[in-house]
Image (cartoon, rainbow, N blue to C red; front, side, top):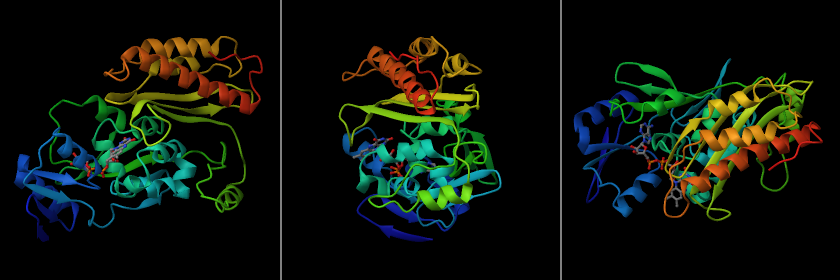
Length: 328
Ligand SMILES: Cc1cc2nc3c(=O)[nH]c(=O)nc-3n(C[C@H](O)[C@H](O)[C@H](O)COP(=O)(O)OP(=O)(O)OC[C@H]3O[C@@H](n4cnc5c(N)ncnc54)[C@H](O)[C@@H]3O)c2cc1C
């Protein structure tokens, strides 16, 4: 372990997760994990939090910055930067909503430093609605073993007596069935495209997946979110919807799944008359955002309902379903 002394605080560079965990246990409230440091800086500068005496840097620990494909999962190390996720082809294929989220969090210089682990740990990061729609699990190291916790459960446990030293090591996302669903990833290239041909050719079929991530802020780009929404699911050949996941968050609203809204779509035909209005009503009723002086809760509810019904409407149009569908 190396220690680099700055005026304050001391920065520690543990060699592995066990050493990092032991340091956090030892320093207790005087120590804090730091990844990219982009969120912590804003807290310190705004006075939301005070600098601890010890910072435990996670970014030299081997194995926490990789994105790897396994038989059933895409596994993303917690120290992976948002920029790396944005440009990763496996993430584009298996976590397209997360890639969309990474495109619109902060700006490129921040995204180069900011990690997915830090975004999740904040509990209000804009990646969270995307990860909820992707059925993500979080892998936490608790000092003796690594435990997988569904993101949805971890979010619901906020405020309960959680282990302060627990270290998020990886995010686990079930692979999308690219043989049965759309195999064409969103293009992640700047300028001339080099990714589509390769990935689509290696995977063959192109199919129908309901998949949309939206973020609305108070300006077009480089903006904190007012509302973020995600919807994912499958559309059968006949246009029937299945495996629907809907999530919303944004600002200081803790992201959550909207299960009643999911039930409105589940099993229905994409072109059904009245479907979008029913979805709009369900989201408006179910979503419980936190308002602030810039955007009240009512505005956020209306925005989420509009974003989600518009997303389904766009997908229906693109897939050739519901010529008669009208959107709000
Ligand atoms: C200019 C600017 C714009 C921003 N815009 C956005 C935005 O649009 N959307 C958005 O969501 N965020 C935004 N952020 C916030 C921030 O950049 C992101 O949330 C980022 O992903 C945080 O990651 P980090 O690695 O910098 O976290 P850090 O600041 O290093 O850490 C954040 C918190 O997570 C904890 N932590 C980090 N990693 C782990 C781990 N592996 N295990 C346990 N705890 C851990 C830390 O102890 C700390 O409490 C913005 C920040 C800035 C400065």
